[in-house]
Length: 84
Image (cartoon, rainbow, N blue to C red; front, side, top):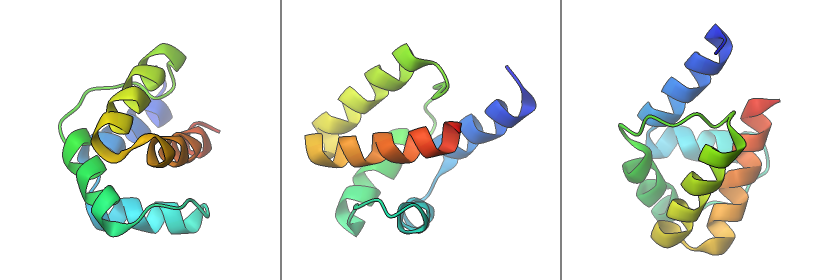
């Protein structure tokens, strides 16, 4: 895994609600504060590789349980932007 991937994955696991909202706004992704809070709390401390398709799918399914399927789709769009 490249240093770039390590940095992105570390950022995902330490992201705050405000940071998630900032990134969502930057990439025109629709996430409200309550959803962002739930997602940030869920992600905190998770060791996941969003560059690995299988791991990202599992993560998005878990986010769907926490914040709903539509929000999970939006977050997946954000993760895809991070991996480009």
